[in-house]
Image (spheres, rainbow, N blue to C red):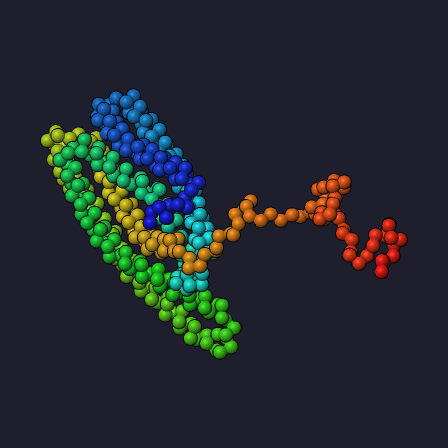
Length: 372
């Protein structure tokens, strides 16, 4: 399925690669900021050395501006790659539909094909954009922050490991429940589009037989079914936010309690504890962003399957191959053959020679009259 979906990327692979590269550089700059801040507190402010404070402050400003620049470039290239991918994917779907027979179109229905080329492609475009921006940035930020936390204080880093296990289990349960719901949601989209299409294409018949009320009830029924499914799916996804907040504040409270004891015991400096707070927020925010990607991927997986069904469908009727390949077979002349021969070579049987009629003589030798 992935090979089929990413085939339309084509000329936008370079933009996607640059978006991923600049997102990685943005993460590097953001990870360096807490380290420089810890050095500024421990070596500059604590010892009262103003030149070190200025030096580390300027270094933090440079890292912040570089992170901003890399983030802007990553967003620009990601937007270009995702929009181009969606354009090529729509063209591929439309070209595939042109090869379908009536039985293929009836299999998917006209409304289903319209939904695939509009709503489903838009869902994949948004998911691809989030993967290029957040899907690359968040895992790198998570791993880098976790490694630096382990280097600063391995014992306090156990708090993050417990939080990550809780979040992964919660997100897995949420995703397992929402995937079937979103599949049903897109099926209801087909019913809604079919109702609108039938009403618009046969509006004269509807008005002639005074069926406006029936059509309104039919559309309202499809809209209400879609509404109920969306409420159910979004209600399950809404559990993501409280679980995240519970884990975030639990980590902050645990880190404050145990970190203060380590500082009093001399096992941890104030700057290191400050950087740990920054890293814990980076870790938890990365997990929150990943949970948003999980939600978007849950919605787009159903769209991806529906699009792959069209792209991998084999037409029932195919155009036959040409009888003669180009450049072979029978050649047709567009000019008389005798035009290619010199006048002296025209003879009997040539296109330029007119044989005498058996009942007529030659006018030059027989006086121009018929021999009897």
